[in-house]
Image (tube, helix red, strand yellow):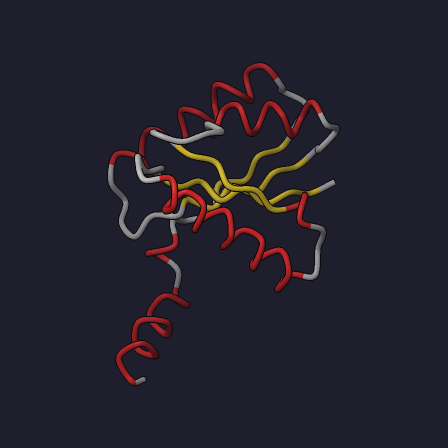
Length: 120
């Protein structure tokens, strides 16, 4: 089973973390998949951590995870921290597959989203 994990920074402000979880539900609905096929995990300040979320997924028989870094630029979290968390989990689960997508700020569709916000 394939799964999408949206990897975000996390916030001390719980309503911000809940906003990301709600986004995950909206993505799930747009994809037409079950809510349990899209999750959100965090680097700091919120749970679950990226590592814990991946381990939980693999414990629940997920075989492939697509990780989308929910960041606008390629800072240290995107370049170093998220890949390190993924590597750590893959060392424990070498038979599983994790694909790391470009961060959302690098996606061509972000240009259209920004232009659309300006035009509205």
